[in-house]
Structure formats: structure tokens, C-alpha cells
Amino acid sequence: MGQRRYGQYCGLAHAVELVGERWTLLIVRDLLVGPKRFTELRRGLVRIPTNILSARLKRLEADGLVRRRVLPRPASAVVYELTEYGRELDEIVLALGRWGARTLGDPHEDDLVTPDSIITALRATFRPEAAVGLDLIVELRVGDVVVTARINDGVLTAWEGSASDTSDAEDTTDTTRTPDAVLTIGPRLRAMLAREITPAQALAEGTLTVSGEPSATDILGTVFALDPSPTRSLAGLDSER
Image 1 (tube, helix red, strand yellow):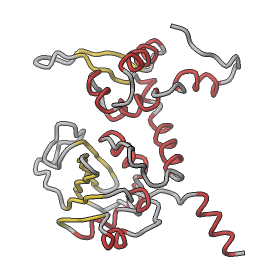
Image 2 (spheres, helix red, strand yellow; image 1 turned 135 degrees about the vertical axis):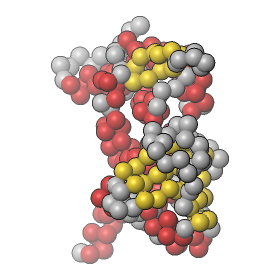
Image 3 (tube, helix red, strand yellow; image 1 turned 60 degrees about the horizontal axis):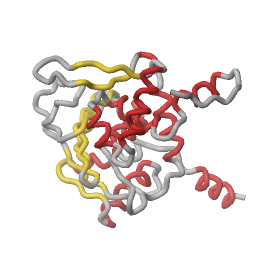
């Protein structure tokens, strides 16, 4: 299998050769959430052609970023997972996600939201210093996607599904898993995280609803927060001149 090269002896050039092809970083993003079967990767990346997904996985395996593993019985299924070298991309992927989200804007009509993209967004925007002393379980509903976030004294655990579904949770020490609040969020989640609108404004306009503990909405823009868009920052500087 051929590999495109930039012909430069440079770590950055080599990194882009490894993960810069279309879809590759999204495959890495989803595998950072956890090991997955081929069909699970395909379900999370619905617009990737099957042959392209196969080719990208083969290349990632050949480059030592991904490996295949057979799950123990009764599953006995083959999953793809990141190697230790591949997992070193974690902070890089989160940083890129934060950087891109600053100018993401509102979603287009045909944009897809997946559980892995929401979990990655939560991890990327989580600010541990703002969560010290908090003990909160919040269920987030974004369209058809349901994700649960457990915040425990500055530590975040997030998994796909409702609060009672611990099958994808890394931390299963809490057996009750009763959510303190359920937040149903419309297309303005990014705007809340960037503090372009407040949760109170989102509640008033109907793009955010909450059941359970009302104060749970305060985590949006504080515990989970984005730096403001650079265009907004520049506009603020211009207004001060």
C-alpha cells in the first residue's frame, strides 16, 4: 500500500503522513473513546465508504497506531483499538477539537452528531479546576444521542447511553447511576460552551430544557467551556478602541 510523503525530514511532516488523510483522525477520535468493531466504527462514521475505512485501518495497523484484538467469549468478536503509540494522540486530538470548535459556528442542517463526537467534546472542554468539589451526574440528550457525564471532584467520566447504562463507563464504582439532571440540548451547545449565550438565555429560547436539578445547567460554560471565537475577540478589541 503506497504512502504519500512530503519528502521532508520533519516530525510534523511525518505526523501528517501518518494521520493526515481524510477520515483518519476521526477514526482515531472514535477509538480514543474505546475499542470498536468494524461495524461500530462504520455506524459512527456513516459517510465513510467501507473500502476507505478498511484501507485507513490497515494503514493505521501498519504504522503501529492500531491493533486488532479478539474479545473473550461469549463475544469472540474482533475489535480495533489504539496501541500505546496511538493513544499518545489523545491530547493532540482534544486540543485540535478545542481549536476547531472556536470557529465551528452553528450546525448545518445535514450535520451529524454522534455519541463519540459528544464524548470527545466533553473531554476536550472539561475544566477540572472548575469542577473541584462537585459530585454530579448529568444526562445529556443532543438529538437522538444520549451521553452521560459523571463529575466527581474534578474528575470526568463520560459514556454513551443513560446514567443507568454502565456498559461503556470506565468508572463503575457508583452503582446507583441516577442522574441529578437531564439536559436536552439543541443546536446551540457550542454557543453555550463558548459563553456566547447563557444557559438561562437558551432555556428562554427553548434550545435547552432541564429536568431534575436546575443548577446543573451552570456546568455549561464553566465546567465545560470553550475559549471565545477569535473573530468575537477581535470584535471586542475593536469596540474598545
